[in-house]
Image (cartoon, rainbow over all chains, first blue to last red; front, side, top):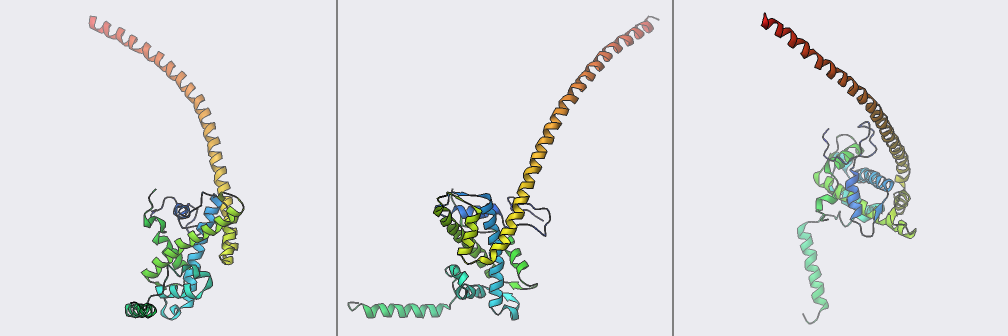
Length: 123
Length: 152
């Protein structure tokens, strides 16, 4: 198995690893948050582990929520739907927006402009 | 320190593996979905960190600790994570303790080794000195032999 992230924690067996995600990368993301000065080693471990659990949870919830069971697939729309419909995933709605057709977007844009024109009598 | 955008992403290979292991066998996960989950995971880290940091600041601490992270999970309504997280932390702590003991033992063994090596090297030096003395005697004996033959 190639090791492309040497900072990963090495556990004895490959099947029962405590964590797979690289702790150093998680630390980098945490440090980018404002007002965060020091992070305890245990806190770092927990955050990494929690992220793994989150990835599993998001994948499974999106899959079960969507038509994936028939199609045996997971696609972006399933995730966007899960973000909107499940409360615990609401914080993801900004980065998992629902996709709309370009023509629908342009239509709604035109409508918005018409509304602005109606409001402004001078225009 | 300049942060490139890719540095705040988690490695795709590992994310893909976690997804595959969580879903039933043979489910096809689109590239777009994988990328989206990876980005969602990064956002999750930021959200959890910010939340945990609030708890630390409330307690007037500058260092984020394990309790802060667990409290953040509850705040974010991910109580389902609490039990597996606590278990994993116990195993991790034991592992850390074990590693510490192993490295301490290694250090002790090293100290013992260097002590015994010092004794050994002293013995070797004494042996070498004896050998040098013996070697000096031999060439003299040979020279005497040759001179005799030449004369005859």
